[in-house]
Image 1 (cartoon, rainbow, N blue to C red):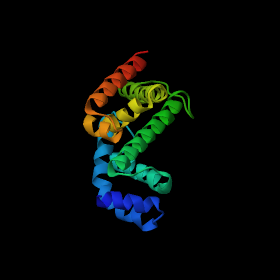
Image 2 (cartoon, rainbow, N blue to C red):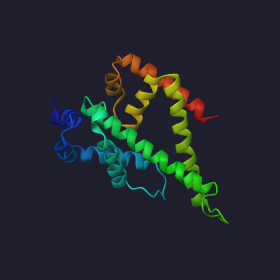
Image 3 (cartoon, helix red, strand yellow):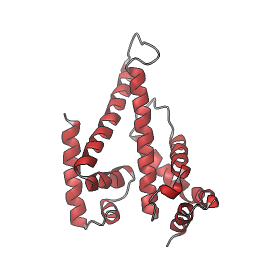
Length: 184
């Protein structure tokens, strides 16, 4: 058992000191996951990778005893999912403003249109993933582990107790499903 797994178990048991010990051990990996998420965002995004890590950490550390973090991999998958949700929430907020929030815009230049398209894309991917969860929860989890958390397909399959062949088969289904949803 790794030191991270040991500390995660202490957090679940209610040890308030454990979170303080865990953050320095996982911060670099969380920052790497956040940077991967932010690379997918277009210029003009108000969140930075560091802020994304901190917001995700606050959400994760708020109630660690209810989380199912048996392993280091599960923790990082939960962190990646938290970051994805933060970005989706930010996109929804930006979309609400775009659709007539507290002000009206008189012009929309090319860079604003590009940002606007990215907001719509983030929301569309989130909606498609929600539909996939209803259709095939295992496929949705595989997408989260592989695409959002950055685990290899084999590692993602192991987390879900899938053989290598099954992981590839589920990944192929998930990609096809998501492409079909996004092309609607």
